[in-house]
Amino acid sequence: MYYYILEPPSSRAVRQTYQRLRDLLTNLGIAGEMVAASPARTPEELSIMGLEKGYSTIVAVGGDAFVGRIAQSIIGQSVLGVIPVGEAVQISQIIGTDNMRSAAEFLKFRRLSTFNTVLTDSEATIFLDSVIEPTKLAKVNFVIDGKLRGYAYFNKLTITRNLEIKIESSHHIEAKKILGLFSVGGRVIGSESVFRGKNVRLVTEPDLPVTVSRVPITKTPIQLQLTQNSLKVITRRGSIL
Amino acid sequence: MKGAMETNGPGTIVGVNVSLSGTLKDQNDISVFGMIEGEVISEKAVIIGQSAQVKGPVKGELVTIAGVVRGSITAHEKLELLETGKVFGSISTKNLVIHSGAVLIGKSEMPAGDETEVGESIPEDQSDSTNEESPELTPDEE
Image 1: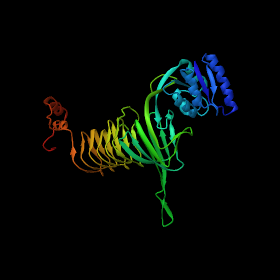
Image 2: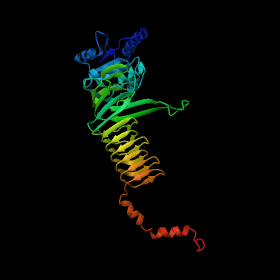
Image 3: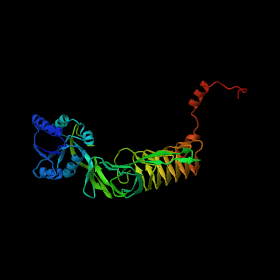
Image 4: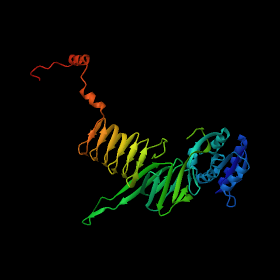
């Protein structure tokens, strides 16, 4: 039996979608307990309630940030099911569909895939790509596996569940003026770096929030640790990814 | 980036505005466009881009240099030094390509196995067949 946690509906249309989902799950024979998150009942609290009730599968119904919060709460204790609703680009790619009906059918077939996640020192878990995106070029110092130290300037830094650090930057070099008439040399320099490790420390100047779908989950400075095969998710095809 | 990690995945890329010190090790390709002080080790290809500056040894199967390397280079298969490449240190490879304009200051070494191939005599039957196919040269033509 599944325990469904619904993201608070952002519109009337979403409320209607939830009603259709109830009918769909009943028709598929996988209707379970359904609870809706609210300011009074956070998705984390509801996840813990579901675990305490003995559910072995918690199904998150909502967008990327919402699913990420539930994944963090149940990691290592329960299987995660997902029905993508709203802004759910990343999670749709992971489970193999952005369609509610298909996702519900996947739940019925219950094929499991195992994923790595990243644990932070603030006890946040990174399952979906997490982003540090300063408003202007910022500096990050990093230590990877205690063996490699470095720094970079960046506009966007992405942390994946496989503890891959992607650093992107783009900065403009001012054009030089000759005799006050001609401009030469002005250009944009783009840079992209990719590193992987098992233990990574990131320190930004200044401290910056780490977000999933623009929702903050933690902030820098941050210590990251790869946790291999730590989360089981119901997907289109079962496999270890 | 490996360090202790041994999983596969896309290679490591060190961007233009990145500066590193320590050991950069990966089972997959490594591309460097920034600055590194330390070892660069890959089980596949290492590309040192035009904007890169590396101070330390570089090891890989295929190594391509378009930037500056101050340190030894070991390429198990092939080392290519492009026209913008500058190497200050010894190199070791089986297959070496140096483009016009490149700078190499240091010793060059090829694995011992290749020396025997250079001195090998052509077997008789092969030399005969070669003679049969080749038109004979007259003293004038010579």
